[in-house]
Length: 463
Image 1 (cartoon, one colour):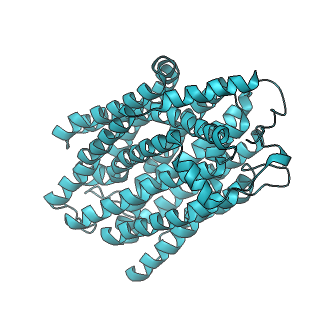
Image 2 (cartoon, one colour):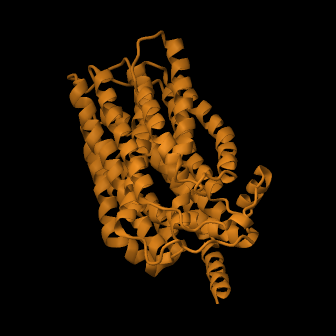
Image 3 (cartoon, one colour):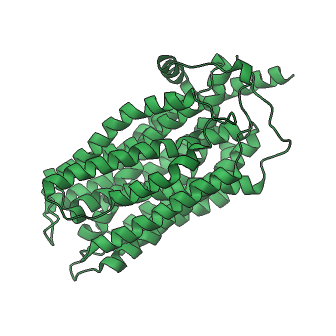
């Protein structure tokens, strides 16, 4: 097994470093939620691509993720920077290119629709490639910064808070900005969305750069392999170790369907507010309920209940809350009250999910290192990043196909009833099915005995 170097300085992780983790999480989730909430709507109602073609852009992106993430993860896992660091320097090199390409994704240009489709594919794939490298530290730095369990829990809470603030900026901040600068017609449609989406993407791009570089400046990699024990890990061996780690497999599946459940809702929320409720501003109210309930849960509930319930029961609670959030809405899908109730319960569920996912990712890396002596932090990071991007891409693909199939037409002021029913299903019934699968995974989880085994072994080695 690889020997791990001791932390280079004694004591606990200090507040500025925890704030750096929170700022980075803020920047990533600001970017992710802007994409998840507005990308498909931008393609169909602003760029002028049909829903089916917009969905195909996302499908191509998901195929590219399936190819590039394992390869880039393998490269990163076997690369060391001059100072022996594994992942932190990626922020310095890729934050600005990622932000620039993000802005270009939401740039409205005047081209024939067939060429617009090709433009959208190329720009999004370049953005996605840069984003893969910029996100590597998101899945590695908790493991590399500290091996203290209480510090990891504390960092996860800062990450959860940062994530919620990022969602606030991406949605409560950007959506009012977008429709204020775009102008809204009497029928609730955007008049000049080119200016609004450019301003929104510029804001998110600046947040992405700021959060990434602040994380780079405030954090350190302390838990590193000794130079004389480092080993190259082949791609095949890396995949075998990952899929042989039950902690990682369970968490990855749980997080995948969690992403599906969230993105079906956020990806259709703009359509829902504009086309079902007839009020673009309603999206802000629903998102406010979602975000502030998440923040309150982080402050008041997550830390306390996680300690009392443990990891598995927290995962079960997350899934149950997600299921419960859809029940009222399913019966009254055109009610803004039902949508707000759904937003509140989803927000609380998200707070627990962010917390438990951060800890599970760190302990997956520890478990693999203990069992095999191989350090796969960057492989785990790229695979988990892929899960996030896969959620956006596949959900947008499915939503695009569903809108096309149900007769959605961005040029119509009033959509056909079939399109309205499709939008409502993406907000309610389909995410509920995803949450039920989450519950099944959580009920069958063996994560707690595996973590207990790891902790017992670590104590024996220290003794």
